[in-house]
Amino acid sequence: MVRRVLSPRRRKAGLPPGTPVHIGEAGGPVRLTVYEYDEHRSTERVLDDPAECGTLRRDSGVVWINVDGVHDVETVTTVCEAFGVHPLVQEDIVNTDQRPKAEEYDGYLYAVVKMVSQSGEALAISVEQLSLIVMDRLVISFQQRPGDVFDALRSRIRTGKGRVRREGADYLAYCMLDAIVDHYFLLLEAIEGRIDPLEAAVLADPEPEAMVTIQALKRELLFLRRSLWPMREMIYRLSREGASVVSESTRFFLRDLYDHVIHIIEILETFQEIVAGTMDIYLSSVSNRMNSIMKVLTIIATIFIPLTFIVGVYGMNFVFMPELEWRWGYPAILGVMALVALLMLRFFRRKKWL
Image (cartoon, rainbow, N blue to C red; front, top):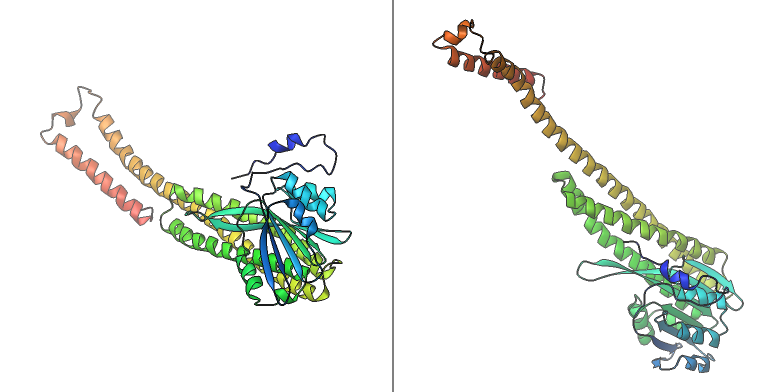
């Protein structure tokens, strides 16, 4: 279903550029979580006051500030102003209808991506905009609502597994992008599990409900394509051209991530072709079923044409019709009608119309 994101824009019409106005759905409670770590230690805590962000020290290690709830414009602006983030970036953060992109400002990198996951018993796709600000030894992430795909990353930070605690803020940002891309793979696996039985059902016995499912899959795949293509451009630019806050070692990892995105896009295009083919199969099956029904009805109508003629002839009630006086006239006409019907059926079978 298409999200309605145009109505809130009316409140923004006429305002100066750089005025933060939230566009999108409210995302639940606001929560600020700070993760501080280096190679030897890791701590995490919740901030009650956004103004406390300005007191965080980055003398050693990396600081990750995660903000849940971008609908609270005051919290977003307070955090951003504590680190000198440009007003245009603040405006983009609270606008949850942004296209995935990466922009370099003086001393930091701003990136926007679409984070997808599945939720509920129906495994509906949940889409959330994630904004990242990457500075020297600092990453600030802005999410629409609590809950994300970074549980494994947080676990590695707590336990010290992997490279994340030995690397800088740019590597942390890469790990977040990598987790997002991995969940695109998981989502495509779930979609594949819906496509295979749908294709088999359409081939066996197409039902009207199949059309609804096909249309839903087409919309989901189209939305994923719209999210992945800009992400592909963004990661390619970061991996090749780089940015002042992205080290050369992290760019190697970004190149590998770019390959993963290309792989996902190829799978996505394959699924789109399969769904389009399934739609064609459904329409062809429905058309063939209709043709079969029309063929049967046409044969029945064709058989009754001569029978109706015979009945019509002997229903004219003329006086001088010798067959009307015959003792066996009625059963004879019935026999002639039956013979005509059998001969026509035999003719249709020889022509392979039956």
